[in-house]
Image 1 (cartoon, one colour):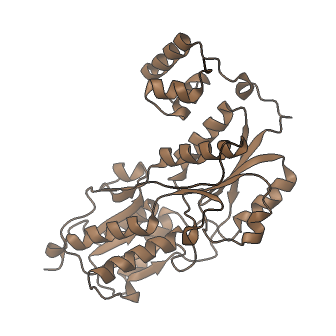
Image 2 (cartoon, one colour; image 1 turned 60 degrees about the vertical axis):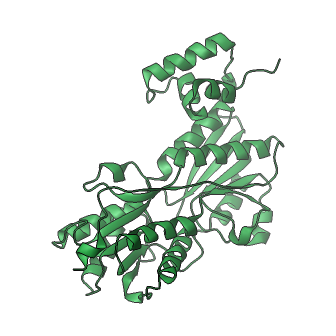
Image 3 (cartoon, rainbow, N blue to C red; image 1 turned 90 degrees about the vertical axis):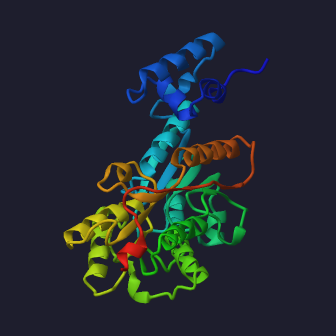
Length: 346
């Protein structure tokens, strides 16, 4: 009979692997009833947790690295926790490394490999176009998470949603609501990145609906800042648009943190949401559901993406899998920040 694994326990409990891991490690951020259910099934199955994950020594060299570009983006928080929990249960420590906006994450990874005895690497956030020669120098398994492979390349692993398609879905929704003057704010809209893919989705939606593209309705975060995925930048970009004289009734933001800042700039300018301007974000962070107004957004499956990423990484480490490209669905969540464009343009 096959030995029971943590994945088996998660399936029997109807919860995620990371939730089981937190229960086994006595984390406080877990529902008591859920913990009780997990521990009962653990008892019934005779499952024995991997104690090496709980009693890791500092000298242990079993480690994976999480390289995060855009660490202030709240979307990454639950993903990081999920991956750290999973790695711990597998008996590995995690090295969390913040990658600055202007840094090349692959160069950072190569340097980290020299300094640490890594078994694998997750790239979270960042660009999707890299020098193939540099990527081939990475002598450990790696997975790009939230970043799709360009041109359908599959020689390296990645987990993502279809950013171009999902952004187009968001803009299609605004157009269906009657908006024809739609602005966009974001970071690195014209350089290889997920933001560029979302920008392409925005432009394709306009083209499909025969709406002229207007450069005056595009605003990018200023370069040179250490962190660009901030509410402050969302505020700055929207304020600049509003006070430039540009006329628009819909605003697509390439991240929820931008959308939250954008809403504050709209209100501070004496306008109403959604009566004057409808705002759509992207990511589906929890804060967007508690902001006033609640943010309409494209919600990415953060926990599921994190679990797919870290599972794939360890399958590669164990030799169970080669490189894979995993595309996951996102969801348009309609909330209070959007309304009819017909009314806005009357």
